[in-house]
Length: 79
Image (cartoon, one colour):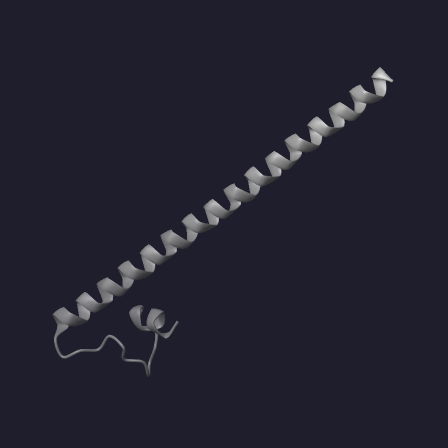
């Protein structure tokens, strides 16, 4: 969290990205920003996959339940 504040230059006492060379400071900020973006994309992708899997499991159990109910109704009508 402190690195994020330092990246936005909102931290006073934290000098994670301070360097003698401005090129290396800019490179460190760019690499950390790229890391944060990639991590965010991966987390959103995992959330979508998890929700998709849960939705698929609900659909399968719902189909099974509807088939079971149909068999019970048909079985009740035949008797």
